[in-house]
Image 1 (cartoon, rainbow, N blue to C red):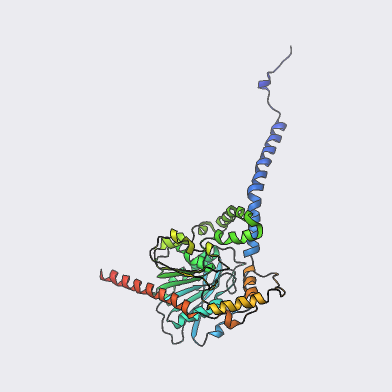
Image 2: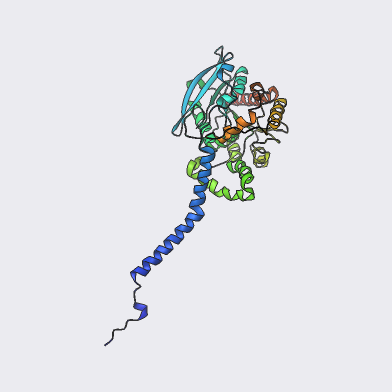
Length: 378
């Protein structure tokens, strides 16, 4: 008698099932590879190319020898993640303690010495100053700059360090952040730095994509917007919770005095990328705004000096370019822009602008002193 099984009861061959699962597996993960992994790898390659190199002193630079007749300094080191960062405390020659501490934080492609003219200016006005090299910059450790969020992390750790030092005990703390650090000065307020007396965010961008987008579109057109989710995902992988927040959210969370200054003709941080244009989203009543139209990116340089630099650069643009091999792209841009100008012009200091910052800091210090007095008398 024949034994005939129903087709419904027949078991599929193991070989066919295994082949089907393999095809499904490779299809799913192949698609994930093309749609997630490959773009993320591409974003990492671009990030490493842009931020992976260290910054060394620029061709035209200031040194302590330019200011040692008027200031004393003390070397200090602190940790930011795994890296040791190097900074200096600057004080008056007579040893008199400053009325407050100003943390001066530098822009990308530069270092703390690039801001020595502003550092010395504050010291002459009766402040102590702490300034430092960011991760991957000059005296500080780090294989490279890592990413735009690193300035926020480093400035936060610099503030935490200053709060622990006996040299700065009971001193009001003020922050002067420019460009990359203009972004950091606003964004690091998301860490909850209520102890700060005031913050100046100068020529700063509100968020990382806001400054990356115009540069991405310069190379790939409107398709550059497609990089946004991968840039954001990579930042979260690299920086974790430190990647959260932006300038506006930090300023609102802080609630204290913030000076926001920008120039309409800024070629480095376009006005549309700035914190300034987001002022309608800022509900911090202690914020003061200054909008310039002819000061470019630096702000602290006289308008005439800025015009002289641009004139010299435009007159020599046809000359051979600098060798960019192995050089950090941001440092290269600084060197390329200033190589036809003299040191005095590049580091000229505008009294009007610096006075505006000083007056803002002074008002904040007076308000803080009045509040402290009221609390003691309560």
